[in-house]
Image 1 (cartoon, rainbow, N blue to C red):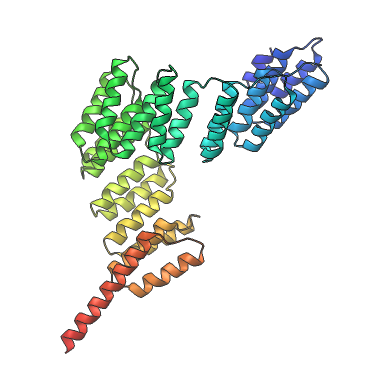
Image 2: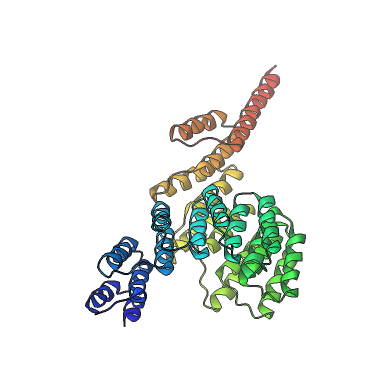
Length: 403
């Protein structure tokens, strides 16, 4: 009954029932604690643990602590998660487990605090808690995301030395890592190793490969991979379709890109903001800006809200074409919708102004950007220097013509 109430989102009712029980035990308390954590009400779950100890006379066990630590991590309250973990160590009743460490390591990795995650990994080793495949996967993924590929490979080697076999998540992380490095050959080698070892590839696997080959302009290879995936019984999701659409947009074949979107919709997979942003970018690359702008209107009609990527892509498209008036109109529309210009917005506009020989306006825009707390990057300065150089050259040419 308690489990049913918690599973149906009624932990408060479950707690009331628990309090009526003549002899509740650790299992019943843990069920209610898990019920509150599943609803994101971790503070309430913590109070149940206090009640468990003080009123029930029952010491929390490893499941109690693991549930609370995971609960705090899932809602991003890492300091609270660490506090529960430290309290457990101080009480000395329960030894830390891999589940607890994995929750903490994953939580800190998700929040970009890789240094703290690595400290917990070190603590885990020192306390003799065996790392699991999940632990290694969390660390390898975070290291790749942090641009530390060599460290990621070192962790993988350690995992294999410790007798642990990679699972599908490990392989997907590796393939994605190699793809982001531009090493498609190595990614395919890992893909083939997966097959040899009987690890079934997923939509995630194929999506990484399709995106990688689309970046290289190898449209035929992306089509082949998509067909292989379908033949092997993989049901493409919106992310995988978006990867294929991206490949054809990058190759300039907008007609085929729209055909793929139509196929996707026939299979009752609705396009999302990424689908439309990919198509908008495709039209912008071809200079077909009216069609790109029309897609923003179509998005809105379909209940898909254009985001910063949508607007910045269109602004960049107009700027590349030297149509600064329309670029500024899109910027104004973006701001009306509640989006503030970003570094990408300013860089695109500065590039457009410089292309039009409006170096002074570009310089003023950079001052505005700095005034809003946005730090220029190399691209900003390069565009500005090139723009001002172009203006000087034009003025020199004009002076020479007069002479």
